[in-house]
Length: 269
Image (cartoon, rainbow, N blue to C red):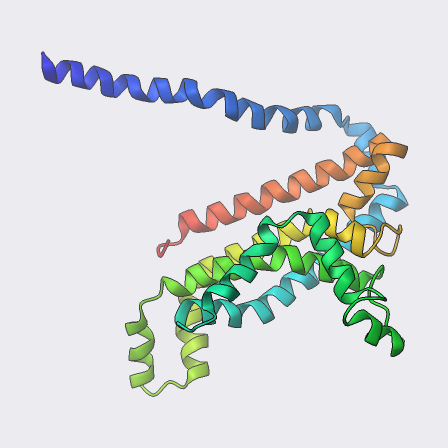
């Protein structure tokens, strides 16, 4: 009798969990479903051909790709350092990498202005040299990099930390130099984490709003990315806002789908 009751309780637990999970799942799904249903296909297609939408989408594509490249080039050494070395300032550096993830975007935008604006620490020097940073496409990349690059660094750090040091030591004993060991052993073994970090960085940069509007402004054709165009479109043309929102929703969904698909298929995950 006792084993039967135990089996009944075990079967009832998934049903209870499903009931308790339903409110949050429905809450997350309902706004997204409403967005898709509200965007009528005919009007959506017409809005996609507007110059404002094309300019914002093109600028977002270019700047986010540059941001992802910058994150890989400069974030990989940071991630490997955090994963492989133990040093006095490690916790401080790790905290600095994490900070933009939890920092309010408005604070990030103000901080970038204080650093690179005309009256900023470096901005004043650059301005004297005739180099303007704030309210330019370069400022868009800086804002996106500031808020998105930590996602790559964190993912890459996890990937590098999961590699057994003995594998790298074996390559070194076989005569591999530091670069050969890193490119032929470390990078291939950490490829899944690195790919996930790149996609997450790109997706986060694609949706960046707060820091960008404060540091780069919202100038159509120059610094207006898709999130900024949604902000203006919501006041002037709801169809434009809906079209851009659907694009961003689709890109974000596909980015997460790719990450989860790669992690699921990879034998090392």
